[in-house]
Image 1 (cartoon, rainbow, N blue to C red):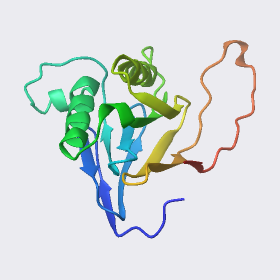
Image 2 (cartoon, rainbow, N blue to C red):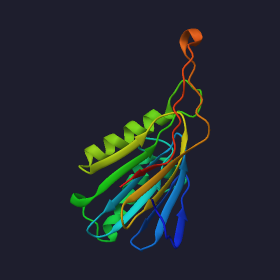
Image 3 (cartoon, rainbow, N blue to C red):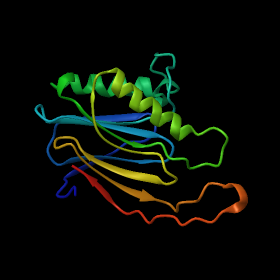
Image 4 (tube, one colour):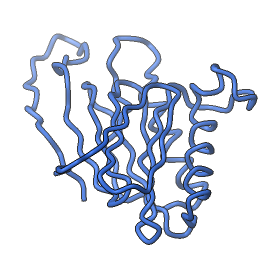
Length: 178
């Protein structure tokens, strides 16, 4: 559990934050969006981003570009490297990608797939994921220690099923990753 914090840094869609200060917690709320929490345990620096869409926009830094995973993953990695992180030591935790809307296209699944592929293609170490599902998440990340905590939010709504088969939903509470 993340406790004893002195400063909370909230981020929203299209945003990222990097810190090497003790007592800082970066937080966000996710639905179909994905957040990558990345840290270097030796340099004791970490950061989080929050992207809305997978893919590769025009890299002009405009408000539109900031919504895309490629842009925000690059910004986060560069912020970490500027504070002494090394690619070989980076550890990644991914959150989000829920199916929160009843739509034909599952944006959450596309975001989750993009994020895991990006981590693999960049040769980064993926240490944990909490992707998919039907509920949003509140995520808190301590960038110096790499500890992350999530809390599922909202009520899980079952997807439409053929022949109206009833099913029970699991009750899910807080999950701590270390």
